Amino acid sequence: MKPLIEITTVPIQIEMKTTNAKLEYARGTAEMEISTDKGGLQIKSRPIRVNIDTFEARNSITPTLARSIEQAAQKGHQAAYTATAATAREGKLMMETKLGEEVITKLAKDAYKENIRDVGLDFLPSVGPEITWDVGEMNIRYEMDKLNFDWKIGGGSFEFTPGDIEFTVTQRPEVLIKYVGGPIYVPPSSDPNYEPVDVRA
Image (cartoon, rainbow, N blue to C red; front, side):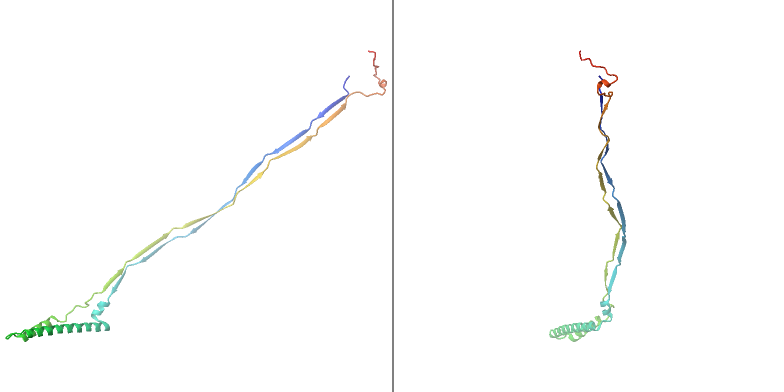
């Protein structure tokens, strides 16, 4: 006897779609500004300086009033000292005079010789100028140009995209039951192809 029912199962169908994770890096921007500071050359020069002081030289020719008074006072002192010394010397000679010596004649000759030595000749100016000098000086200063670099860097950024799994059910599971037998007659004897069952066996 053939089976009357045919059972068929349809399995589930699942479609899986995956997206890989990824890490993306966005580069930063960089800017640079360049500026220049100008240098330069500086030269400072001071030539030699000669100082000539002619005060004393001019005073030896045409002295000032104060210097004239000072010189006259010095000459007066010197004349007083000279006269005192001469008087003392003459007095000593007269006290030691012996008979027959010509003391007066000797004193006159000595006085005459003194006057001859003092002829009043002098070189003018009697004092030379005082000369001094300041040493010359030269300073050189050189400064190179300067370059200034200003960097402006923007920070980079990372972007992470996580992975993804997508499930899609394309076919649902099913159980198909199909009747494959013939028609069922009630009572069975109404079946045109009915054959009585032999129950004796």
